[in-house]
Image 1 (cartoon, rainbow, N blue to C red):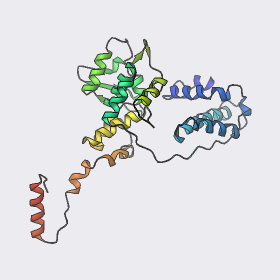
Image 2 (image 1 turned 135 degrees about the horizontal axis):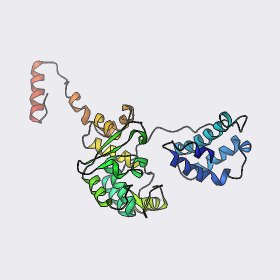
Image 3 (image 1 turned 90 degrees about the vertical axis):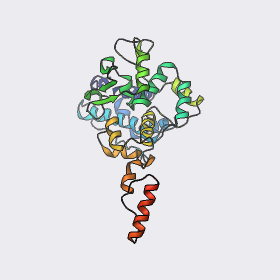
Image 4 (image 1 turned 45 degrees about the vertical axis):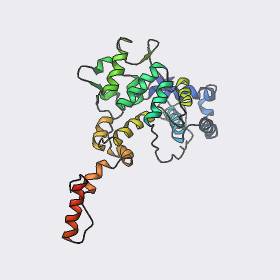
Amino acid sequence: MRWLNESTHKKSLGTDKIHLKWLHPYLSDKKLIDINRTMIEEIANNKAATGVSDARVNRVLALIRSILNRAVNQWEWLDSAPKIKLRKEGSHRIRWLTRSEAKKLIAELPSHLADMTIFTLATGLRQANVKNLKWEHVDLENKHAWVNADEAKGAKTISVPLNLDALTILKKRLGTHSKYVFTYKGKPVFNVSTKAWTKALGRAGIENFCWHDLRHTWASWHVQNGTTLQELQILGGWSSFVMVLRYAHLSSSHLRVAADRIYVTNSLHDENRYKNGLRDSGVTA
């Protein structure tokens, strides 16, 4: 409880609450001094047994480690904390849906989650930014929305151009709540990875897919349709170009002009014939 009270500024506070709720059965009756490496490893194994990735297991372990370290260094409740070794994570996967898969999933979702899914696929916004989107940050007339720097992962304001799909969802949601765009039974949506989400994935025949993969899907569709990686970086609000390079393999259109700058020839005659061939195919040498 002290951790939560001191972490109200964290963008990931909602995620911390989800992890702590899951941890409650394992740690609620334990004293801080009784938490050791053996107990933590057992918790990690139980989390892994739920079918989540090593990265998700590490998020839980990192939270435990942060709380215990604060109990030592700031609260002075403990003399020392057990060393917690995070699991080795594999290479970052890119999981995305085809358009037919996306349509199947949307058809199986309850209305509020379907709207949030379509809006995410249309804008690429992260889960927290969709859940917390307020009407005061939406300009329907100019087809524009924005995420303030204090709510953005990269601590920079994100400009969100609204395409037809995004505008359709927003107009549909008008009047449902005075403050928040996306709500359920009159209240802001706290969690999207619910049983309804999981069951919808099952009915749609989609495996190994989480909510954040909707953002991967959005980025993948963009690259496949000719959006440059530089444009994608700005649209997605990534602070590092390295993050965008994950999607480069999905299309080579951004390199096609560069590839056409050279040709294999040993004579002027071959060079002219090569250029004529390019002209015939509609490509400028």
